[in-house]
Amino acid sequence: MSPQCGGKSMSLNAEELFSERALGFRPTEIRELLKLVDSPEIISLAGGMPDDRFFPIDRVIEASTFALREYGKKALQYGSTEGIKKLRVLLMDRMENEGVQGIDLDNVIISTASQQGLSLMAQVFVNPGDTIIVEEPSYLGAIQAFGSMQAKFCTVPLDKDGMQMGILEDRLKELQKANIRPKFVYTVPNFHNPAGVTMTLKRRTKLIELAHAYDLLIIEDDPYGEIRFEGEPIPSLLALDGKDRVVGLRTFSKISFPGLRLGWIVAREDIMSKIIVGKQAADLCSPAMTQYIAYEFVSRGWLDDYVDVVRREYPRKKNAMISALEQYFPVGSSWTDPQGGLFVWVKAPDSIDTAAMFREAINAKVAYVVGIAFYPHRDDTCHMRLNFSAVDPEHITEGVHRLGDLLKSKI
Image (cartoon, rainbow, N blue to C red; front, side, top):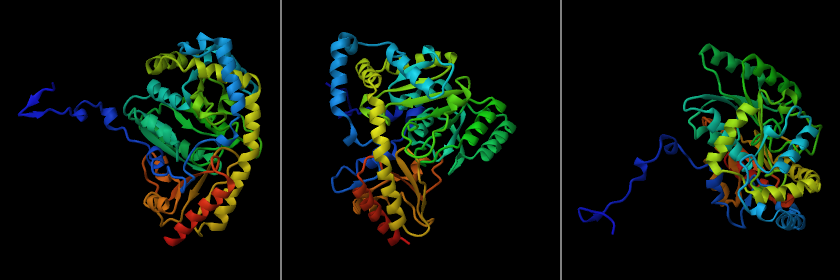
């Protein structure tokens, strides 16, 4: 029987128990908005998912069946925090083939996708009130992870060539003058989420130069680097400067299947020792079963086959979106034209608040992600992120048409 007070049941006030950090937690706009678009009538350009029509289900079944038969109980047991050795070796070799040198097994850990990598970066490096440097706009999941640790965001705007290094240098001078040392610079250099832009080699070199001059750590988040379907690859920051000043975050979620919930982190040994303890506290280890499936899938060359399909199919989708934007969006709009990845970043005419317009878009049976979600200080109201990867070209064209008509009605 529950305790009684004045004849009424006492109700627990959880607000009095929450930590200061938890009181600051906010649901992401993407998760909240997706609740509104779960209707077959709505064309959703709001996701960030790969196109599941290209998933090679038969090969995944074969890899899964083999993993159970070959590894048996090991696939169903707890594993080491660092991850299955043979998968880590495979990923290490894969990165060496991309030009990353000087790493060994002790520099690679399997994470439960890259979002855990971001959470571990926050846990390992950020105290409440610490300053970190991020691009503006920046990946929403990173804003959430770092914000949950009560970081202070110092933002550097993007242009078509990525983070603007002149402004970054000005920010660093200002922080140095104020005797503030930022904990790290966080960047998504390839096919940025949400902006779709790629940091040029010149700017990557300048970022590394500034990192050495100001004794900075760089967190390089590269979920989309392998999904390049135009232009020439640019070496990663990790390849250009090594692991001393760069921590690399990678994921299977965008280059294969989000359902694996697997990623990996590359870091020097002293940083890795803290990451391992942080991961032990978070989840002990990533699932052994999906690690063995990933190993079989990658080692047989099937990941490369799948990425080739994506590189062939996604340009049609992206081109359909760009063509529709050119045809249907009003004068005063602008957008990026990515060479890879999943997203186009659109600026509406200045007078239009895309957050205020969202429910009208739902009524028009089309969805996007409001741009304000990607700004740590929530000081931009005229952008939207459109996803082309998960939608067929015909629905992309129709969805952009609906958005264009809505925008024109508000001018």
